[in-house]
Amino acid sequence: MDADLNKREPLRRILSRRGAILAAASIQALGRKKSGKYYRQEDINLLNTLANQGAIAIENARMLKQVIEKERMEEALSIAHDLQMSMLPEKCPEIEGVDMAAFSQPAREVGGDFFINRN
Image (cartoon, rainbow, N blue to C red; front, side):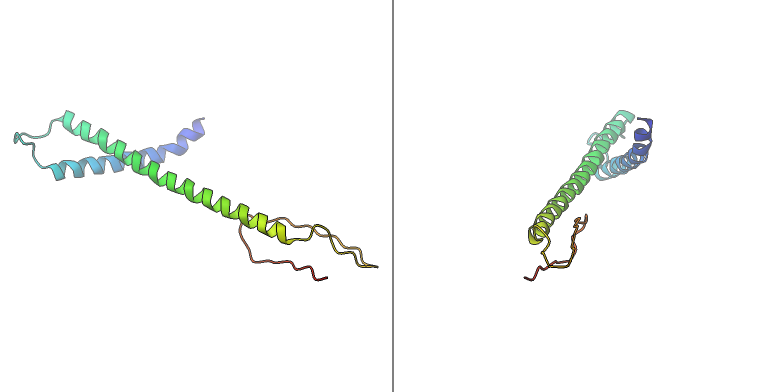
């Protein structure tokens, strides 16, 4: 469990940094308050919290995109596996005087190998 927390710590620092940058940019973009007063620490804390949440939402969207891409790749690999297996003969051809055996294990990546059984 501690190992998982240690792996996440750099991500937390990155998100916190992004949040701080977003908060600073927000304050700069907003300019002064309508009242003309300066922002209080509570205002800055609120903007920082909102910016951190925004940074997390952006990171979640990025990770979701990665998951979707991975699922598409796995689906493509599954289709390629099924296609490749459908092209292989169910059993080795029987040739008198020849002992023949074959084994096929599909790779995790799509390749260009093709087996033809010519009768």
